[in-house]
Amino acid sequence: MSLLQTIGKIALNRLRVKRQLRIPVAVQPITGLRRSPIRRARRSALGARIGAALAVHANVPKVAYLRSQHAIYRATAPHDVLAPIPETEIDAAGEFRVLPLADERHPNDLLDVSEDLGRVPSLIAAEAAFRRNTNQASALVVARRLEEQEGDLRMMERRAREIDEQLERSDSDRSAAVTARIQSVDDGSTRIDAPVRVPSRLRIVLWRLFEVLTMAGESVSCLAALTNTSGLDPTNLTAEWQNGAAPSIIGWAVAAVTISALLFVICEWSFARIGAAIDSDRRRSFNLITGSAALFFITAVVGGISFLRAQLGGAGQVSIGLACIYFVVGATPLVGGALVHLHADMLSAAREEALAKVGIPNPADVALHLRTEHEKALATERDALRTRRDVVSADIQVLHAQMHGAEQALRDQARWDTRVVQEFIDSLRAALAKDAKYYDYYACKWDKSALLPILPIEPGPGGALLPIGKRRVS
Image 1 (cartoon, rainbow, N blue to C red):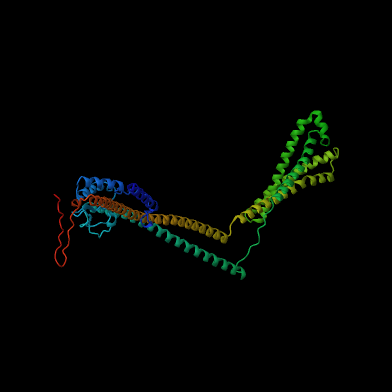
Image 2: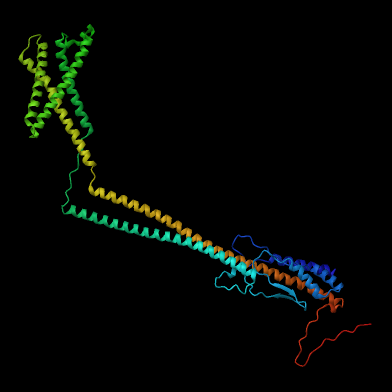
């Protein structure tokens, strides 16, 4: 019954310890790499009791028993760690001993180039050399990459500073130019032109419409004279149209419009020739003669048309007064239409000249526009450089973080592997101590002290003390 109570207390204590066990922050790795599992040499109290009792009952010496248990526990040592596992043994006195290594550091702790690997065990030295070469190669690659990115960063910063200086100079030049322009306007050295007046398009259209109306009036006057020569009554063309004279009326109408247009063109041409002769000294006689001839021809045509109309109006009797009236009525649309045409042309030319003058930019405005466009291009380039600089800076920070993370991962691995080894050694010591405790208990209980190892006794200052042997009962 006491044995069962002892077993229950031990189990409860172990469960309580497991629940309260937490890994200290100092030994918690920060990386997400797969870690080696912690292996412990486990020995239950019940198993230690039974094993010790059987060993004592079979008269197995304590040293041999502990060495056999040590071999069993040692077989469970972790094999997937890089930390050196020290050798352990059971000495002649039955004590658990850990044989110290020449260097107990982890291979990741031997990455320093100045570190001498001669006194490190061969396997640890080989692993440390491999890790050192790998670390140096990766450091060279990262250093080359960092040098390239830092060179690009310096170049972009230099270009950004140059652009800022150019923008500052441009702003100062703009301010100086504006100040000089204001001063020139104040002192009157700069002449301010009057605003350009552009003739309205509607005005030109109205003058052109008036020109068309004058041509229509001249065409009506010419139609009356032409229809009269063909025996038609121009005062009653509706009746003539109904009587079958439609083709003649249409033909004479076309002829009247054509003659009126030709007379209009000739009149305008003659005015233009005479005006050119007045304004210019070259070929003045020729222009005057041709223009006068054209006007004489128009006068003759208009006079003939007036005679025909006077004949129509006087019922065959032509009077000079009536002919003059018809001459004035026929010549007025031609002269007025020519003058209207010249005025409309003048307005059109003035409009084109004004639009061309308005379209010509001011040199100061052109310079300001070019300066503004140049500043926009510089600002765009500067913004692009700043964006690229931020990206390169972020890449540099990422590289530094990766290097620090890699170093931290190596340190974490070394710390974790060392902890795994220490946990195993501690568990091995605890398991063997448990076996030794119960072995001593049963050896003393069953009076088999001969199975226990003889401890050496150090001699005192007064002499040596020897153990008294037990008497054998015969």
